[in-house]
Amino acid sequence: MIRKPLLAAGVAGLLALTAACSGGGSGEGGAGALTYLTFETPSLTSTFWNDSIAAAQKEAAGVKINRITAPSTDRDAYAKQLQSSGQFPDLLQSITPSNFVGAGLLKPYDKTWVEANFLLPQGNALKGEVYIPPTNSQIVPQVYYNKELFAKAGIAQPPKNWAEFLDACAKLKAAGVNPIELGGADPFAAGMPLVGIISADILGKNPKWLQDRYADKVKFADANVVTAVGKYRTLVSNGYFDKGALGVKYADSITRFTGGKSAMYPMGSWFLGAVPKDKADSFGSFPWPTDDGSVVVPFVVGGSMAISAKTKDPAGATKFAQAWSLNPANLKLLIETDGAFPMLKEKTLDDYGVTVTQVFKDSYAYVTEQNNKVSAIGWATNDDSLPPGLNDQFYAASQALFTSDDVAGELAKLDGAWKTATQ
Image (cartoon, rainbow, N blue to C red; front, side):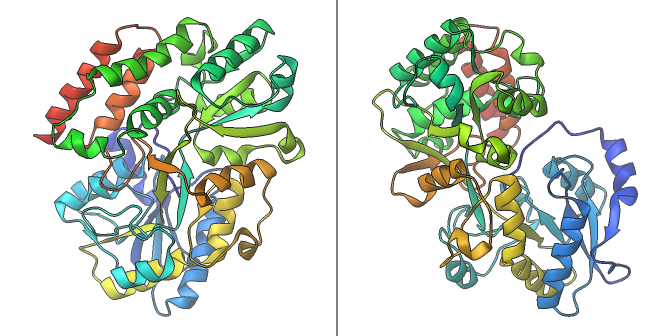
């Protein structure tokens, strides 16, 4: 389960909603119950959470759960606000561990259990410790494309390198088709092209680039990063995005793309859950293109829940968290509605009883194949995660570069923000 950050609401409003958003998991709560922070989406509804809690409780006999719901999908911000008021939950769903480990707030999972159950046991480890079980993964981003619009523009195959990508964009524009969809009004969605470019061109050549950045061996303002990010300005200046893209909400960008308003859509693989089943054969996917055509997969391992180091019942919390994380029914819904790629050992898609589209299967192949997988910049929850606050700066730069050609200046701002965040 991968986080999809949105702007947090105000502190007072969020805290006021705590009681209103609380709900007993499967009707069990009250005194002595463990507090479990969740979030809700159109797919991950209250019913899903309550049913999943009930299923885990069957494996974790005697553990009572009081479920609370974050009033936005920014669980990190909400969890921090709860912590500041002395209400840090016992269990927290799909948070970013690096934002909490430094304060000693999270309890690591037993390494033997992690090794026994997951394909990439260290996929989201921080300094060798696993704080959220690596239950699933996603690619952030892939480029999804409309086969019918490609055919209309005379494009026979998806582009395999950057030159072919630019050629495809030019042909689409000439055919009267908006080449690339962008939900630029939502910062995380606005950042997708830059995530693709930097992950492919910079991390693809140096997978340890983020570790080198922490060691101050490289910078965002370095010439190779400036050159790479300059590709984004090329896409903008050539008119390959809608001129009003900064006013398009993320949800509307999905509707626009699936409705045939644009030919390509760089987005995290959770988009696969939004592909219309009756039109699924009209869509395909390809990796963000590199100059030489080499395949680079911006990869992020997600997971289920973190356990508070301050919980009053560490044994019960661990028992529940492990049971929830290994429940195939929980992953089934995430696979079908959130485009999650499952990462449990010794299981195939058929083992989950899922119904998925061909574009899902084609996308999932990039996970199972041997290729150059690198951390998706800004999305990794392991040692490659950005310092606190840098994600927001990265998104701000993405939006700014839609209207400004000062690539070097925006990247220098990121270096300044990095220095402030790591002092």
